[in-house]
Image 1: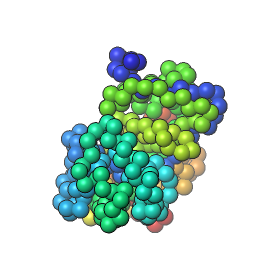
Image 2: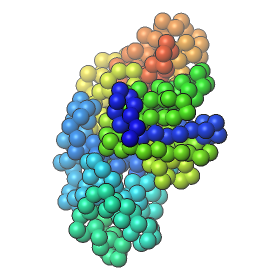
Image 3: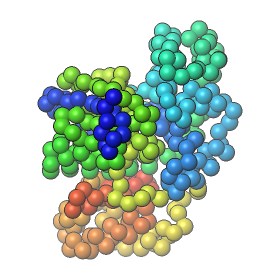
Image 4: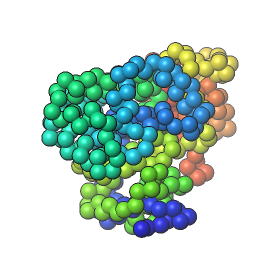
Length: 340
C-alpha cells in the first residue's frame, strides 16, 4: 500500500519522458462532467457554489432520473458506457450511449459488480432493449436538467483553467504544471503523480508512452478522478483552480441570462467605452495577464487592473493567479453580453 500527501493512501501514475511529451489539457467531456454533477448533487460540500443549483435541479428532475442515480452512485464505481470520457457534442455522445453494443454493457456492469452491488433491474440491461432505452431516456433527461443549462459556464471556467495550465507549462515546464494541478490532493513526485482519491483507491498506472489527458472540472470540485481505461490515453479529471472561492453557479437561482442582483451596479458601468473594450479584449484573448491586457488596449496596467476587478465583480470575467501573474478569461455571461 502506497502512502503520500501527508500519509494519505494514494493512486500513483508513472510517467516517462514520452508520457510527459504527450500529456495535454482538454475541454471537459460532457458525460464525464455529467457524472461529476450527479455525484455533486447528492453531496453537501461547497454549499455556496452548488446550494442553489442543487435546489433548482432537484425540483426539476422527474422519476425517470432514479435509474441513472442508482447506476451512478455518490461514491464508488459507475458503468463506463454512461460516464465516458469521450469528446464530442452532448447529443452525439448520448446517441452513442444508445448504440452501445450489448457486450460492452454487459462487461461494464460486470466490472462494477466486482466492487459493489448493482440494482436488481440493471442485470437485465444487456438483454432488454426496452429497458436500456428507458435508461437512455433517463440519461438525456438528467443531462438536460443538471448540465445543459450550465454548459456555457462550465466551458468558460474550464477555458480559463486551461489557459492557466498552458502558461504554467510554458513558463516552468511540465514539472510546474503537474505540481500545481490541485496541491491538496495531487502531488508531483517525479516521475510519479500521486493522487489522493476520495475512494481511497491504491494502485499504480504506468502510462507506457500514451501520456495523460488532463481535464479541468467545475462539478468535480471535491476531488480528482481517474479513468484508466479511456482511449487513446487515460484521463485525470481535476477540480478547476481559481484565485478565490467561486460564487453560486450562474443560472441556478435565476433564469438563464439574468444578471445577479449584486452585479447590477458594475454592469451599468460597462456602458463606458473603455470597460467594454477591456471585456472585448479579454474575450478575444482568454488567459491574458493584466500587463498584456494593458498593452492590448494602450492603457496603464493599474487602469487595466481596475477595470478587470469591476468586470470580475460583475461575473463577466474569471481571474486566476499563477504565482505573481493574474490571468483573465471571459465567463459565459460576459460572452453572452458581447454577443459572441
